[in-house]
Length: 293
Image (cartoon, rainbow, N blue to C red; front, side):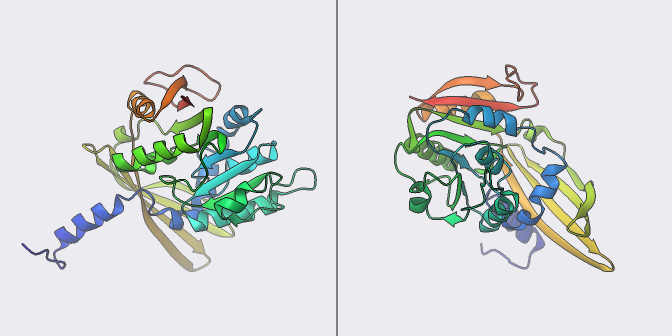
């Protein structure tokens, strides 16, 4: 039976399926990502990742580096950071942010640019490089990194099981023997209640009054959570709306641990907060550190 493109039900179904690509929406999110996260997560996780990276001999790869929220402070602390992200607008924000925050004593932005993988890895003196690419097929040599980190739920944007399998295999390939893979899962997202048009945040950004209006829908069978984000910017009498969808797939810590083990990792630690408290199912933070075996 042919699909009736004019049928609202069919349009809604096709739009929902199309929205369940985890990488979609992030280009549109880029102008608002730092503004929102400064009011929610902030930099609470940065000291943890700095401790993980301290003492690492060699470059540190960050998956889904986005606007540099983690990459830049770790580079300032002395790590040689290589960030990868699929979103060119996110990476452009990271480069501008790094240059803005640079200083003569520790300049992470002095050489920052969106590089190709080869040039990023050939310049060990540069404290920070960012690369546009797909975390399912990392464009780096085998055994290139002693440490790979995936902060703040980036693996949850892999909405299909095959996508996660490919990403974990790619991480295992680029990690050095006995290298560490650290990842964070945003907890309990599948249990969030569904709601429509809830005002989440209000504030000012770049001279505009900004309101975030959010809706949440759940596909509990597939463990998918979709956030409809609507950012409303008001400048004087002018109002502009930016609307997009972000979709996440959440595995529990035991489920993710089993996937890591099948990909060739040994679980080293599981934490329930940023200070290293042991994890349990009620923890507000889900962090796994695993070794490549």
